[in-house]
Length: 434
Image (cartoon, rainbow, N blue to C red; front, side, top):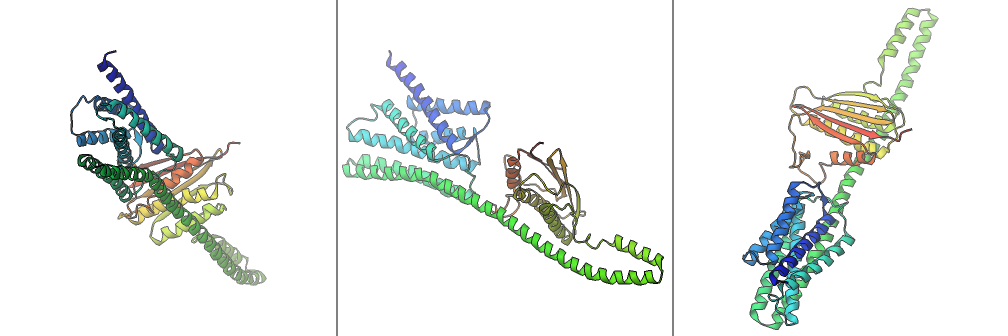
């Protein structure tokens, strides 16, 4: 077989191997998006560039080849879900490890007296096999299920490690080779091994930071639940105090009614009883009277906040005493949804501010519709996700994400819609069907 044909076939096989290794790597840390013409085009570009690099079809400086390779990997990462900074981190770490493995092979070739340039196809194949071993090892320890997007400051700090590694090792390699001193080559080889180990550790660091951020977010949710239960206890105590007052007043009222009966003033007794019935002394304190402890505690507490800020709070609750959903999940869903609605009203500079809550059961499924006025300003990211307007993005902006997570637990759905000054959140939770 002609050598050129053989080299081309080997180039095709290795470009496919490179694409397969990259697919395994990205699938470990990112979630694949649906295939489309863009994903096919980016994978095609990556494989074509790999083929050109392996066969040296395009003559370019080494640093230019490295930059184009990084760009090709980054474009492929767009076939996966995740924030752009997260993709940048994993792209640079992958290319850093890739470059370090190739330089490691060069050192091995030098140590055994082989010319890497003369055996470039073999060296390229061996470096990819070594890279595949590293990627498969990473797959055994890491999964993409619980990896969250880190704040930009964390991502930028992590980006500096692979960038610095590539620069240090690349510079050290050429300095040691050009010095023609065995000791320099040995020290450069040792630094390469250390840098390779450091870059592999980045994955552990990223996972730990992600878990730490998730724990902080859970703590925020748990704090909300604890605050809710504390308010619920406080409300019960206030209710007991009001009942004691009412019992004392009732005694005096009964004495008055007894005197009127003795005087046979039945008309006055009738009028007094009508006034007593219409008075409804607890209406000003509570708006939710479903006897569902979680819903009543949440809605009544949010009602007191709405009254404090002059926000109309309108509720229509058609739910049973017992709901087929976990109380903690109801705290997360209803608490965060009402918090968002109230906060949007509090910061809004509009004439009429209101919150409307509608809850009803339909065939053991819970429907929640919350409508609120707001100033018309919505902040979104590039994917259309609604962002918090608060400065602390780590501990805030978790409301809708927390709601979605709880909704997914019951295979439900959440729909957000808004007009100029009205925001509507619709939630459906599926209960067990009888």
